[in-house]
Image (cartoon, rainbow, N blue to C red; front, side, top):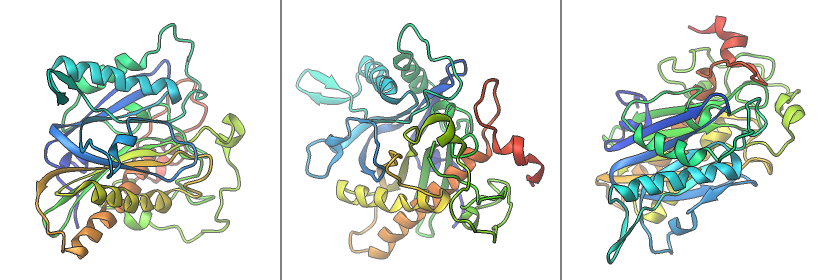
Amino acid sequence: MKPGKLNLITDVPGIRVGNAQDNKIKTGVTVLTADEPFLANVDVMGGAPGTRETDCLAAENLVSDVDAIVLAGGSAFGLDAASGVTDALAESGLGFRVGPVTVPIVPAAIIFDLINGGDKQWNENPYKQLGRDALAACDTDFTLGTAGAGVGATTAIIKGGLGSASVVLPSGHTVGALIVANPHGSPLVPDSHQFWAAPFEVENEFGGLGVCTNTQPLFQPKNEKLAAYEAKANTTIGIVATDAVLDKAQAKRFAVAAQDGIARSVVPSHTLFDGDLLFGVSTRKKAITNEDVVLHMALGHAASLCVARALSRAVYLAESFPDDTLPTWQSLHGQHSQ
């Protein structure tokens, strides 16, 4: 399996992503939308999620399609980014029609980035406008690393960020992941510059550093994030998408399988103090038969590998800015890049 042309979630035909950020505040918003409404579900494995409009995605509930998904910094304040996206979509006449009324459906999830060195003394919640700006910026190409919702992201010992990756299956179906990496755990093997996700790397996308054989101790001996912020300041959120035709229940299983990618790239993962959450998205452009169990399993496995790769790319591509509370991988280990 090889990545798509851009090695981004936008390799799934019809999907677009946009970023907006405020580097003074050290926060931002990332929006995923598509050429037409798309099917979505969600899976939450962490113990501290922050969400909006996710209950409607459950298989037993009415709404099947959404118009956009928002990933944001700002903790509970960041959920207001979805309001900006909702307003902008409504102004364009897009959304779920009920008689004469159009209501855009915009689920959202947030990370905690309120104690990362930025100036959080705003006079007005900035996230509504950031949501609008991110939607307006949606395109097939977009920036990774310290961008969008990943601007203020951190990990146990270094900065996190925004990452993405894709793969094209032998069947011709495309799978992609979009990840905001802000975990309690570490993406790096202790006492090394190498990534836990190294076995799944494609084309040196996060440095081509190889697999580290020093896996003792398994837990990071020092957690700078815990010391600086408290244990509760964590979450990895994201979206996995495919052009394969899925129903809501299958989209849920797609997201469930993709969660393995977090466990493959962060140690420890899915802790009580993380709000780990993945949306599963289908643009329903390329048919599969429900009886093709092997292909359904392949889609989930591909999603998990894309998540692991995207998370590592987020960390690898993060940039240093003034007043950062943690270093970047590049500032510590950039000499090891290939």
